Length: 266
Image (cartoon, rainbow, N blue to C red):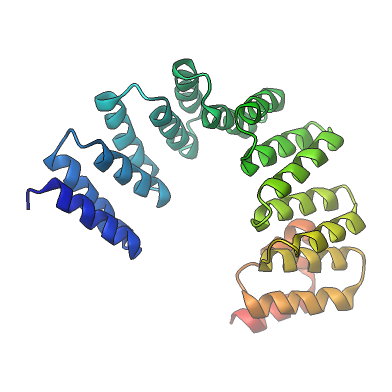
């Protein structure tokens, strides 16, 4: 029972079969038995973060940073936990510590952008996202952050460029196509949004995109096509229909769509 490596291996075994709470317990034993075992701390904290146990992850990251730090990447993890816990001033303090230690940490700049975005301090967010992209230009989430920040300050041209960059950098993820389409529909550019959905089909597939398409047809008053697509989406995954409401909030009040939802979910 006192072999830290055995507990560590057991933790990874549990992670592989999605028994995450047991994994956390086993990984915790590994660094309790051997307090100098850095991988035990980090993997345990990472698993906690994955499960959204933010306070628990935070405690372990802070302890690891005291023991094995100061470490720029650990500081980013600490900042991330604080951000998820809505403690933004502490999150920013830790991000800035991380940047001071390593001015080339792109993830730190990205997280700084995320903190400013949460505070609606958009020009600071833009600067931070741009710095992250200068350091690492193959991360689609960085372009998405920048696109949304430009959208917030109504610089629609730069927003468009960065939404395009996000879809080009991460074309297999429906998230980036969906966010781009939502942006276009909020500007009333429904034809353009449909074109982007057509383009997305070459790279990826997702029920969320079917619901987006249904909502666009609802907005351009092609009710028949909207109903067909909405039904197709519900047949495949009846938990994602609310993506339609982001584009077409009026669908929420539509009796026909509501009765379809009831039929497929009850």
